[in-house]
Image (cartoon, one colour):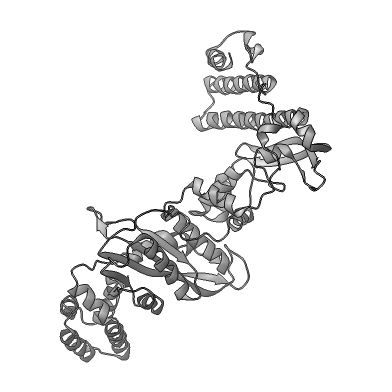
Length: 473
């Protein structure tokens, strides 16, 4: 280890002083160049130090008395390459076979201790960085951002998302044991959808061969709005591609039943644009009252009054007061004033939409506990910004995974939570003995040296060398 640090220090000083000499000689330099020089040296130090730690640990395991009781050496100096944030770390380790006659276990004990899988190429921290960045960026851009030292492909990013699997919408829920259910009179559910392009073949992004649109559903439950910005209180998101809407609503109902006292609830307001899959929630969840999304209602008001804007306020007056006779009278005027078939068709389409969703209009107008719906905005932020606002085409499985990954983030999922999901999904082979018994803790792997970099004692001492000395001695 001393040699590694000495080599780093000498190269570090030499590279920086060369940069400074060029700067003082009048060459145009930028601070980013200096940062890059320092980063390259530190990455090299990280690679060499990590390889040294792994090989040193492997040596101690091999010499351990406890290891000799349970494991036979099968092969030595077996190569392994692990891609990390520092770059490619190459090291050698020992392959062992269990002495237990009933157990034919073969393994690399040092890899087991550090949690490195048999065929693992990427460090788990780097894998999680890929997944986190893929929540916001394309697979290739996520790969470029996560690993600046070793080039990675978009397929690598996709593989890590596949490895994570289908994330449960409730993956971030707290444990419910002995937790008292909340008692609220009113609860709110809002729902909308995002339309994405699905490919014929099982590919995920950046292809022109698009075939059909698929609906990615978004449902979220909350306890109302609070603050000047109307922030949703205790919001919980659900999303994915569901061929049966009932499956989605069963998840939502299960969540509500686990968190809230259903007997205490008086009304659950379900807001949406009137789509059939949203109205299915009225059948699946008791005590629900439908509220029509004002954003979509406004679209149809504009459609109906495009040729006669003077009647717009009149139509809104009837809608806001839920006066059906007033609305019908206004539609008669709009139909009469339509000058061609296209305008008449628009009036007819808007009228049919409003009449078929009249209960949602009436509930919003007459129930003081109902609230506006912000589903369109949430679909834009949670789903569309990553999945449909750019010219991407997905496989159905890829779209479902990404929708769930986005919801995982908006439900408060962090990097530590992703790591726990990885641990849960993986079926790692575990060694049969405790690692504490393999490693002799009576001696330290790296005794502290009084003088780690003797070379710094030589030659002319510069300000930079003094700074390095403070770290080295």
